[in-house]
Length: 497
Image (cartoon, rainbow, N blue to C red; front, side, top):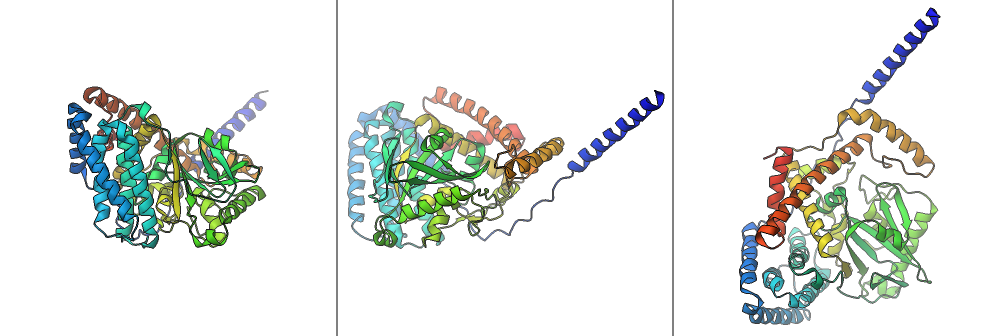
């Protein structure tokens, strides 16, 4: 009996020793990834803080005086800009023409007064849509790889949307319609209804998710944007809709329309190939052919998610590739202006999640492709404000990343995470989805958890500050105020101030 007890004790000691050794071995960190050298690019920056403060002061002034004090001037300015847009629409205007800056300035300066005279919001919204449609039409002849051209189109389209959304966030919610039908581009492919508008087979659905990583994807390139995900719509002859998309958790999948809408989205935009493209004029069902190719590939077998974001290698696919790959197979290149990620901190953070290609196809940049028309967009004030708060948190965190802030993780959890990764890999072999996404390392998964926790804590405090701001001043904080408050919160939470 004593010998048995002694043997059992020795076996227990050996087992514990093996577990300790295994735990220590599993604690060994992976080697830091070697990232390619950045291209000599200059990320876009507004550098207009003083100007935005002037706009806010004008809003406060007009808000105190009331709409009647500025309505006549506002109507006169709207009339003038609308006539200007109609005249420009009948000619070809180069990207460096001074009129584009005039239109950008007009959209910004009309915003404070429209936010007070909110019965004119529909007219202001139509004006932005007309300017966007005209700019995209004019940009067909522009060189989208030329930095000044990219800057001009971005300032007008992103800046115009930003101005419009500041108005939407200040007017009564009852004045804001969720659906904005921007330009119902005619199309011959099969169609179906989506939330009050018509989508066609081959349409591109660009959206923004509610996760912190969605905000990182939207903001993490040289032209920070509003969108983090791209999906391709397929509509068959019976009107049944399939949405082909790639998710980090499971790779490429086919979703029903209900499944697609069930995933949290802060905004959705529909993009469609222009009807006057040579490929469409030659074959009006060209976009449907691309959708057929994407659907067939998704149904033929599993395609893993492409964390590297390598759009030249279609053996794995990230969300943008789901849209671009079938069109490329048919001879059409989407993303006429490729996306660049030049900021060192952003590269390090995305590299920690597995990204290896920093010239790529970012979802937000698809909006600026001259081959595509913006058909419709959905948003509402509450989710729109959440979108702005998420953006502010990420913008400030990426500034801190440039200053040396690294994505951290709870090192003592690494052995368990690696065991979960092994389990996930086994589940993936049988077509399932494990706790650690296919293609993501255990360390990356832990970094994602740390990042999500930090984002949630900062966002929670920022929302408190935003509420205090609104109670004190009587209006929601505009984006530049959110940035200022986010900088304070990040300093408090991470000790970076």
